[in-house]
Length: 108
Image (cartoon, rainbow, N blue to C red; front, side, top):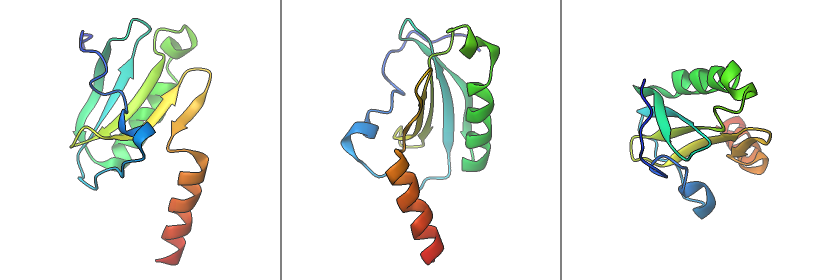
């Protein structure tokens, strides 16, 4: 897929604001490049597929070469559901947020 010159459109802006991610079952996976551009890896997919594709994207040789510097998953409302950064790992959701979510699931 061709790179898009849009900047910060799918940049997980809600990650810093603490917004809850929408429960809309439509997600997109994005790869981001050092020059600030990004392109869609997959669009309009379910949550499980989005996580699988994002994980595979973080394992691409392009990551090792520094061609891909971030991977994000956004929901149908363009809210950030996941942010991974090269050399940092998973940034959002934070470990505390992941733990709280897992605890909530156990209580159900």
